[in-house]
Length: 262
Length: 289
Image (tube, rainbow over all chains, first blue to last red; front, side, top):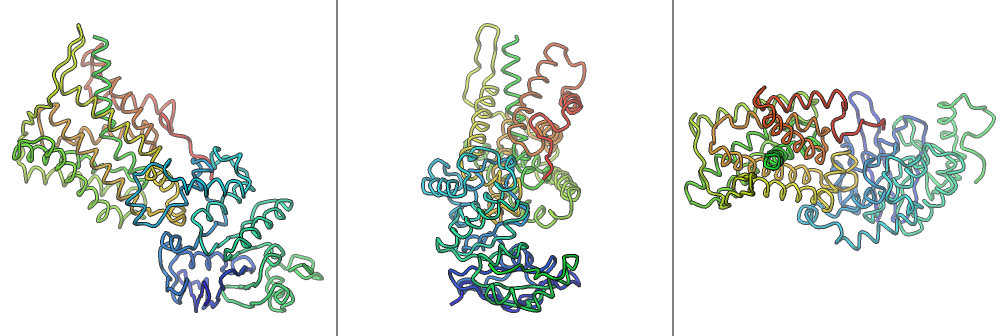
């Protein structure tokens, strides 16, 4: 059974149809990318899955349960975590506190235990140390998150999403704003996260980056799913190339906008 | 003389801090100036007084006052603030002021317009060291005030709730996405904020030996001055500002006499400091995101 199933998911903002009857399924352990030109509805899809916006129509099934319209805190407790396209750290808290605070337990436990001492949270503290280490943030642990540079913020964003041990990770343009030399190491980190057994969905504007990581790729254009398949299949798909060329026609037309072979 | 003024000033300051801390925490979360918190203060004082009269136990009165105020605060948050929170800052502010005025009229209707005496014995003797005199009531205010402030500081810095409060006050949507039960955090902070108001109301009532429908007026505008002075939404700044205003008031009265109404001093301090530091004592100028 698929970990995540989305059926005829539709999101309208007033008269604008941002997502039009999207179907997709993500199997446990898969790495699925969602690509598409600007305004294709990629982030809206994530928002609808993660509970940040309520879909107008359609179903979202996670782990066999219907969850469409659930608030984001509930999605987080069920095991769906996300990173944001524009990094949104708690700027005046330290890097360690940013990861720590995101490791909060279920709502009921939180209410019962909220007056407990933070120093008692041994298991969580170990988890936080482990993430600081993995994401190269250990020496920045006591710095305020507001002082980090873009690359560090990107890593914090992912580490924070992982702190509650989710089963599905949604990464919204994790490479946005970092230079070309930062992309390789970031891809390495994300690959590591996936290999540790996590199911990952990635929204990405850098198509080459997305294709190199994915088992499967979903292509959106103007709110519709226009293609789906393995990375190579999608790279050669006429509709996909047309969608990208149509939107970014300023590029030299002779080359495939999705890049050459991997 | 100096020493007893100093102690008086600190006692006054801790009372102000008790009054202003709840609204400061609430402002941090919701960006609403919770004027109606001062109605929680009056409610706590009335219920505390009535239960003390009926049972003879001040402890029971305090618990009942806290409970009544906390229930009122929680109800206010659920029924009033939650539905109108996303309509911009002005609407909740005016709703809050309206609630405060309505509650004052309700107190007048239920308890009558005349002040009640609140001659509860707090059980501490008046202390004298040479010229320094501390009355029993002031001693209690001092102890309770510093204790509660210490506990609040501890809760914010060392408990999970403190961590959740800080995250939620910085970015509620992200806190929510990171699995923080932000509704629970807001509810907990309203309970704490209105409990503090009830404690201050009872202390005020005993200190001045009077409880009356509009006893929340002066606390309402003074807490406003203190919260702004401390840097909006910064609880430690609120405590510092409360202490500063308590001390300045006491020393101005002490050395200059009543050259101007005592309660005007808070605003003069506010204006002078805001001219130099528009972001308040401990507030930071907002960085671009």
